[in-house]
Image (cartoon, rainbow, N blue to C red; front, side, top):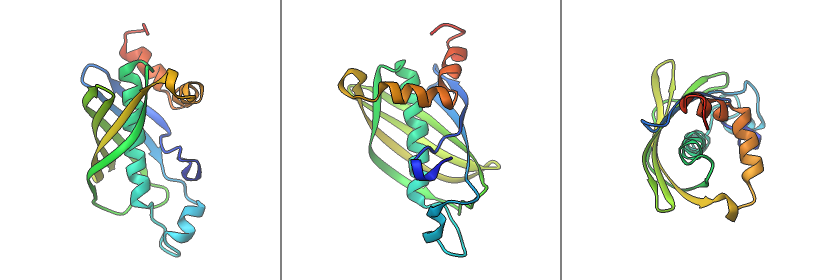
Length: 161
């Protein structure tokens, strides 16, 4: 996890395209300028960054489901709940489950757990635009390769993409 660069997902652990689910892992860094203000002497990951983490997992799921045909953009967050504090060094299991994809929109449920205990969840709504309408395809594809999404897609597709 690189908080300052909004790179919240470290790697994709599992992808099931048929079920529309994705599991990712993320380790909160021990030190970050974010913690200097949130909070001095009691560093905690801000809730908005936990939401961003769930949104990114949901976005990676949409990328995989559409075969990189559409770029997801966060539109709204509903029913967000921060159930516990997340401290530096925490190992996060981030999951996304797709509820709808089509008509230029996607809806997913996001969840973050630490050692099997739920610490945050929400519903994420994303607007999707064809990659030919946004200049991000190269950057998004490279990041997806870094976190293992492309390899997970290959495995999920039985070796064919």
